Image 1 (tube, rainbow, N blue to C red):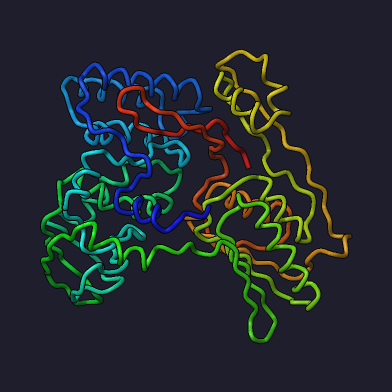
Image 2 (tube, one colour; image 1 turned 30 degrees about the vertical axis):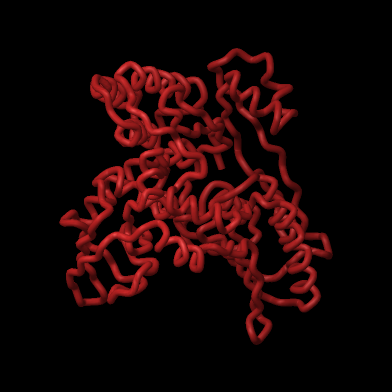
Length: 421
């Protein structure tokens, strides 16, 4: 998706394009919101108890409910309820990290924020780039901030988001919202005492926070341009073509890219093809089938089956997105599970206009959702080999809907489907 630079910078600094009004939530309002959240999770999600027992889930519910006995601000409420949803360990079922009006007002009125753009990579806090002139450099590791160990900080932040495997898919989102989350959690702004590690060297450095006006030009220059989503390169000896594919949801663009690239590599008889879907967060099954259609493969089934939780919400979703499924489920009772069976995709090895060279697919733990399905389909269809491990197990969730809590106006997502690869 293309995001204008000005909007992107606003999101980076304030961390949400639609602000939530600053407010204090009463105990009653918090309980109403939590009751709504709890009810919708049960109504919509196809299986809350893959990674925890129902008893464990209910115990967490009861513990949180007991905490909602006093007034608190919006960010404190978010820090209480978000880990409850994240405990489902579904990367598609999570809260959106909010930007409260008091955070936005603070920045707009000269409040200070991090003087470094930080990123979270492989359970470490690293410097993406400094926003001011200082001795700290890109990729220096922050091992302590304001006397709090970075691992302690990360252990709290990881609790806010769910994921089936590890923390890799959480890290990009937490990176984008890090300054806001540190402000919510620790009220940091005016001054930062860092302990820095570069190789074997460790030292301390103190920096003042900077204003939004000072941060904006640097962020705009470094992050204001959209990264290309589809990239083709050919090795100098013309023996290996590499396709870097960052999403599987921009289907017209993906088709245009593949039509162009495969016409070249087929004409030039390039013997080796690398498809790099590392850090690809996914997309639709249609994107998976489309990309595979350019490769020589055996017959395959994308999903063995897909469980759909029947509710008024899943009926509405499928009426809009998948009319054929809606016709099958529209009269089914709410609360039941409906098993969707995928049809075979026929093999295509006899076709002349497909790529028949050696195919290698690169994945990592940030290869998620539809991109993970693509890697699985490569194996099942014997279209090539896969190097690395994705962020999804063989059973995971997807096709989510957005909801908003009535009082806090916090936004969250719940998966509708459980996929069996």
